[in-house]
Length: 339
Image 1 (spheres, rainbow, N blue to C red):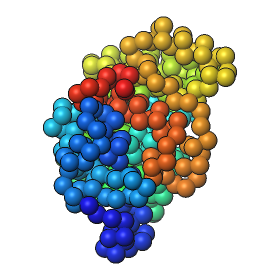
Image 2: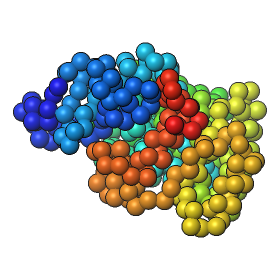
Image 3: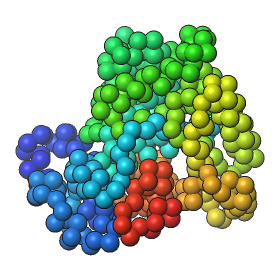
């Protein structure tokens, strides 16, 4: 087993902190199946395990991927977009939180930031400097330019960052054929680069970036909360997805609805979740994301709730969401409940 002190001597204090920030623990992995922690630990070589202290042991993502692949978890390539035509409901939070949990489960992940505000890029401190390519620059020639736009964050996580220039996409992507294929072609190059998942962080408007993201997506997640504007945003988003798929003769992507900012103390929260359960039962993620200050605290440190190993409702809810979204289940578990 590798200890933190050994890693520190090998890679230095700064890199050590990065290397240990997003790791799945043996205990978390054992919670997926019927094996206890001891049996799970025995499934790994000593060099794949890191002593985190406090009786916790972390696992390198590649080792987790091998373990879960052998137990039926599917790592085939997919594009997941978080889209809602209404702003301020947590698309970026959902994107970056899912991305960091997915790498802990062994997926190699790239975030494609299409929002001109660049919130995902800002969170990970990957705002492009002058001359560095963004989506606006690469979509016309993805085969040559995509690899130059990828910025590594850590481990198996990377990002194609965004800046204000992506606001010009509505003018440069005026051709319908280009709208249909722009994001798709970029994602195919990311697949060739070895990524398992592309998480798309989209702007809160029906511009060509969102249209192109919908055309490229295998899964569209619609985050929402309890207010009436959020419900209206859900209806508009679903209607537009249907219209876009019809116009481009595409199969409808899988739709998942993620209810965030869930607070049982607020009556309308319960009413809206009940409404979603009745009207969108097949699409609704069964685990809502409870309100928590952990999100703000984590992002103020330029990380997500999956950095480190502190437990909490935010981490628990998003773990169960990611497991439902990506089908992470092995013998003895239930895919929908996460139990």
